Length: 88
Image 1 (cartoon, rainbow, N blue to C red):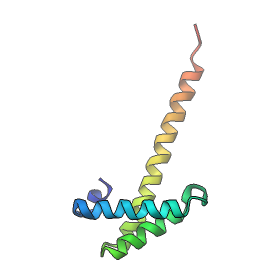
Image 2 (cartoon, rainbow, N blue to C red):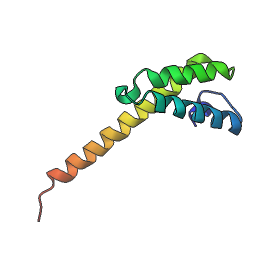
Image 3 (cartoon, helix red, strand yellow):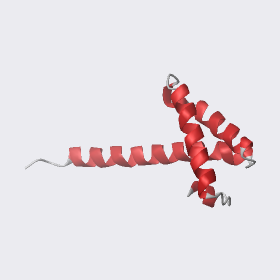
Image 4 (cartoon, helix red, strand yellow):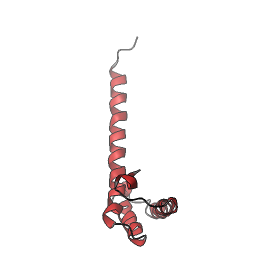
């Protein structure tokens, strides 16, 4: 979905290669907290190797992080609202 939003239309095989290659890099850099920087570098390198724009390679993990933060914030807000309800 992110690639379509960035006006890229890779084949399913290209999307598979992107995900597979970045998962391997993620395993290699498991010791970096939240893999800050490692994911961006991995996606950028893979996008460059596939002939896709490097900026898109940086944008994909950045958008994923923003999505994760938004979903986490929504979950915390839901937990907070449930905890504030009077029991009874």
